[in-house]
Length: 223
Image (cartoon, rainbow, N blue to C red; front, top):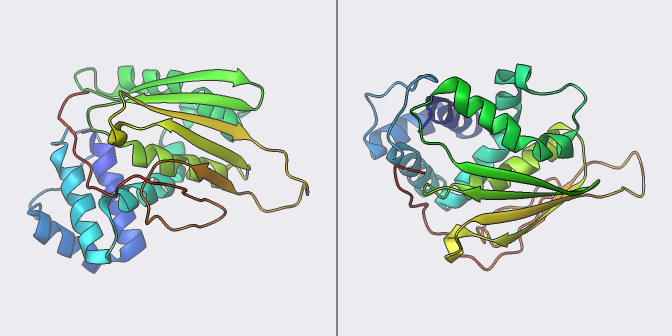
């Protein structure tokens, strides 16, 4: 697992739940001795243990924690990888170019690191299809990131998840659509109709309509 994921996951926990929560997670997950560095590779299991333990301590499912993290981490990643992002892009354009963006980072950062397979397809001017395929099955992070992108770019996006690896499918497929707001000054919102964690909270117009279970993520070390 790329160190930037673990580093920002730690920052998310501290920012959202406090330093004491992170210290408790470290102790419970048996990672007290670890210091996460962005340029280092760590075991995938660290992410699962952090999500599981954070969920237990906050009375939420691990998948809810990962979705929250996905939303939180968008501004941090956009700042870190600013040079790879076109200033002319809006939120949907960023999503449409995620395959190119992801490939450039995959090549630049760590050629020996196994990273998820992400494919983006422009359906029309206002719709993009994303296919996520990874043994790690961290699609909840991607689901949260859709909300994060909508909030960051002040756009109204609707995302529908057609398939999900947590439901036994080979890959997760999201269709993301930009809607035209009736009032140009209306607050941006994102609605997700997906088979995701049933106890995820609804915030900023972000909704889960789900029949999927909220089991802890369980992935492998290779993608």
